[in-house]
Image (cartoon, rainbow, N blue to C red; front, side, top):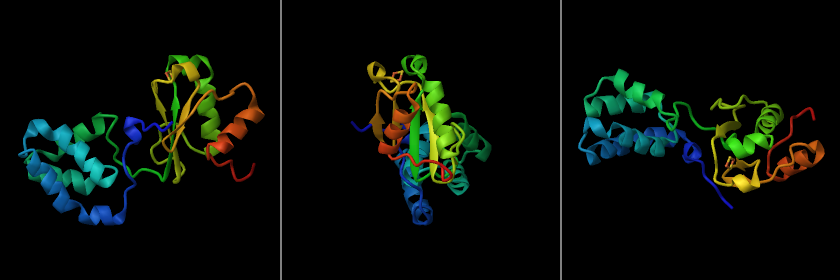
Length: 179
Ligand code: FES
C-alpha cells in the first residue's frame, strides 16, 4: 500500500525548478487574480512547483500579490504544511497517533532518529533522510506504522530489536555507517 502524508507530498526541489519558477509562479498568482484571500492556495501551488517555499518565491508572491513580505512569510511559516527548506531525497513518517503511540510509536521514533542520525521533525534531517511525525495514517489496526518514501510499513515489532532492524532494513532505511 502506498501512502503519501500531506506534508510529504511535494516533489524534490531542483536548481532548474528554481530557475524556471518566476513565469510559473506568476501564472499561479494570475490564476487567483492576485486576491489576498487566496494567499494560502497560492503558496500551496508555489510549493508544488518548487518542492518547498524558497525565499525568492516568497518575495515574488509578495510583489505580485501586493502584500507585505512579512505577511506572506508569516503565513508560510505558520502552517505546518508549508516547508521553507528544500526536502531531503528520502523521507520517513512515523505515526504518533494514539494507537501507534501505545504500541511503541515513541520508541520507534527514537530508533529512527538513532538509525538515521536525524532529529524528529527536522526538515533538513541528515541531508538525505528526514523523519517527521504524523498523527494518524488511518491504519490504526496495524499499529505501529511508518511510511518510508511513500510506502506504508505496518506492525513493526518494537519489542523485538533484531526483527525490528530487519524490518527497517527491508523498508529501505539505511543502518548507521558504524553499525
Ligand atoms: S494512530 Fe497510527 S495509524 Fe492511526
